Image (cartoon, rainbow, N blue to C red; front, side):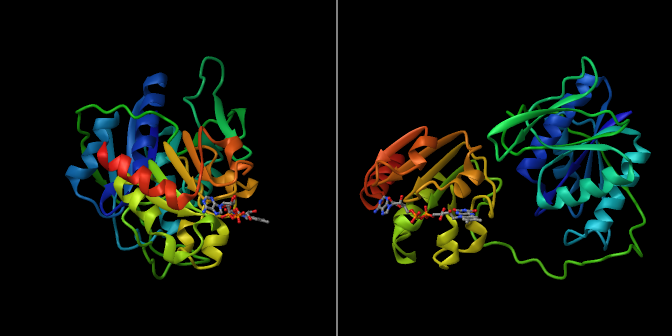
Length: 320
Ligand SMILES: Cc1cc2nc3c(=O)[nH]c(=O)nc-3n(C[C@H](O)[C@H](O)[C@H](O)COP(=O)(O)OP(=O)(O)OC[C@H]3O[C@@H](n4cnc5c(N)ncnc54)[C@H](O)[C@@H]3O)c2cc1C
């Protein structure tokens, strides 16, 4: 029996959310007294893959072939299904992501496993297998008892504290036949979002709304983001107006973020915006209207003009 952890790589490195999944899966494995095995798909060096050991895993299985590229969902799913079977996995863990949603759902279906997403805590295994998950855009929690033999858990990003050790895990190459799979769609090209930091994975986010007045006034926000080492985001109207790129749009219809710090600059705090950011650990709101709804969701609020406040915040961060 094992806990199998499905991970995703970016430029040959585990994504931060996958490291969280490794840590989480390894704790579940320790709780159940079984081994914790990482599945890594795609190009990466053995040394980089072995780092899974730092986060508690005892073995890494590495699959890489010509079909395992460009987020080929059918091929990734087949590798996960076959590996879960060969490793006798009783629990399969991943971080929640667009690709993982598709791959985990297919694999769970094939293995007749119960799947729970947005998991925020280790399972309670004292009687059954009870999982706590975040629902209604982070406004409530639900507890689900998974009764199938194999259990699939997709954990929410940025909710679990990482514990890092110094061990390294042995890496074993595996091969699964991924040729001739039926495909209803195929990714032919991927265009990477510009910007140095991945917004869904970011720890710190500085975000702008219509109160920033126009794309030509974004520099003070970018300066603060740079000083903090933060990713940048925006409200929906801002990306609709092409003031900022669409991959920065957060909210109900955009990217969901859960950073340690979310700074909202000139954003009113409409419910559709909050739906994508209300899992942030600390929310700071800068708005000139003291009645702006966002202040109700804020941990810290600054009533003021963004163009006065932002340069002062940036100077203060630099001084630190
Ligand atoms: C189905 C649906 C889905 C949606 N999905 C999303 C979504 O995913 N994400 C999203 O963001 N929105 C979404 N919306 C839109 C949402 O309802 C709001 O219209 C939008 O979030 C408002 O954007 P905003 O706060 O940037 O602009 P505004 O509502 O215009 O607010 C601008 C704010 O800036 C403040 N301000 C102005 N000037 C300054 C200044 N100089 N200094 C400081 N503050 C200033 C104002 O007081 C105001 O509070 C959705 C709407 C619908 C109907």
